Length: 451
Image (cartoon, rainbow, N blue to C red; front, side, top):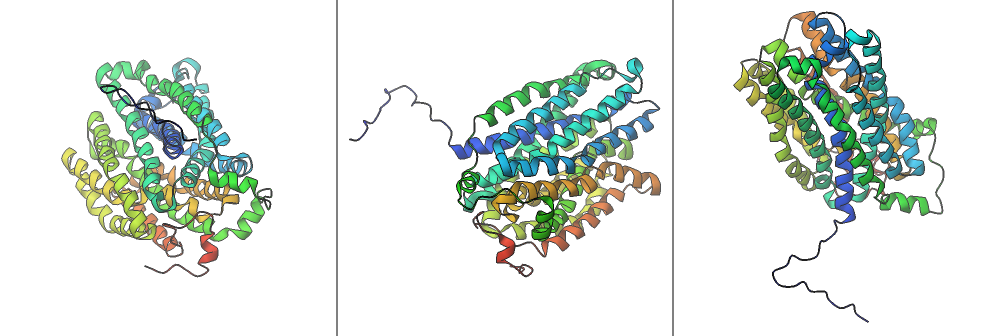
């Protein structure tokens, strides 16, 4: 017997239609990424206030200490990847993601409660380091899990489009954190920001994390993972030794691409406010405004770039981006050095060149590994490379400028990273439109063709 069709009365809105599992999966993944990058945004944009409140020494020394502390959290990320990745392949993606978002947000929230160096001395930087390590440990499972969760829900022919919204969450979280820090700075003034105002954005992370945990806890695990769990051949995920022995090719390819991805990413997003203020001489407000406007500009193009990758392939998008950055980063950094207007135009141009990489991360990397080791393989390769080359990019860029006196050193470092990325790209098989149930490296035993 057919169910009767329910009609709504004229003049009244139709009944609320609950979002599809795919849309809820994309939202749940992007929200966690936004929380992660919200923390990076408020830390990067508030580093002057944080260093003055929690570290000893003059301004220059304190900022270097604060940048080094930012890098410390990345050194812990491989441990997080080694812990959360295999756990996510064993008990499921959703359970791990509910835990990581709560730990990330809790650590960020607690930073806002640390007493100042004037009150508790060296306990202040010690507590900050401890919380940054906890944040890095939880983040070690967050990004790989969120990208895997989204990729396993998305249809094969639109994985690039849906995956781009994960990075939309990246820029949205970073921009929101940066805008909060800038807004409070303009509203409260420099003295109040140094005394207590810098803490407010950190405290806001608490309720955001609780919302994210609730959203994720209400999701079902991905269809592909449930299918894997129900399989008669289902076994315990292989250990680290087997993972390295059997999947060393995708581990190296992902690691090489992440070198390029994250040197550009953290130089462009995290280090740029400090660079503009200390090396170019922009005011604090101008140095914060340039990347915020640039990131909002990048967000417009992310879904279009993701959708384009579904048509032309991931390899083509990465190739265009890497070659464009290789050729354009030095002249654009020179443009940035001319002042506020040049910095704004140069940042937007660099961001546009970077978008083809950023938009396709979560469609590209999970597809490198089969379901049984997808979370672990992605998390380990991504976080080891990020810890060595990504989170250290701000302090490496700053240190190279101090050592050589050349303000273009971050641009040269980005060029070197792009060359590493191009070398890795040569061995990356094309996965656009192909099922995640396939193993792309078994299908393509030789280096991929440049089609």
